[in-house]
Length: 263
Image (cartoon, rainbow, N blue to C red; front, side):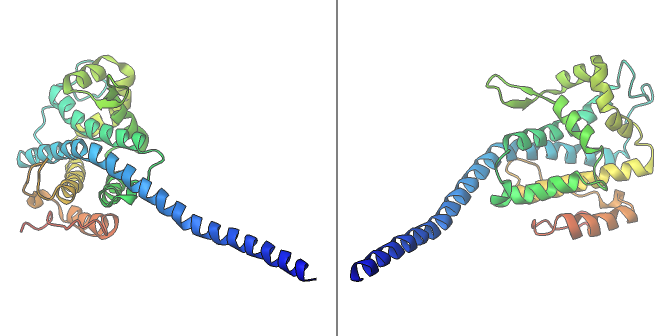
């Protein structure tokens, strides 16, 4: 009888010991996984944030310049986006958005399987990208935005994607009918800057890009400090920026609205 009890005690001890070991392993494994995710996210953000912010900064600078000139873009000779000889100003402006969307595409592709939100900068960046891609803010639907971003990228010598230059982009959308078809929604929008609604749409997008730059590069080590253009924003646009952009999408990013009221 005593030997049976001993064996029973040994069995229970072994069983409980295995369970305890497993219970210990689970949090250890989770900590290792989370730590690995953080390191991977940090490495990705370190590699991609700088070029992405520079692309966003270029949009901010151009939007500010256009706002100062009341969006005087020469599109009189080439009003149709399907024209065989697209206006160079229009191509140059479209390229800024295409390059930015291309950087977003590259980050998305290289971050598959990695939680960018495990890095504080990555978590903020995701909120800004979600805001810029929302139906109320975006300049083209997701399908066209992804396609336009794809047109602004190509594989580099090491097999990784890179953004192409303005001349390459201009040649691609001027000579390739499929490329210009994908770009048509953006080109048509940019060709309507004589319309107030279009100007306000571009200005709002520029404000979000401005906030992205100021929030993730507050010391402007890679970008330029720029003044806001609140005097060019309509009352409706200011309300949208205040309540939708900063009141909803950019909560908990540390972004502050200094764009609708000049400090």
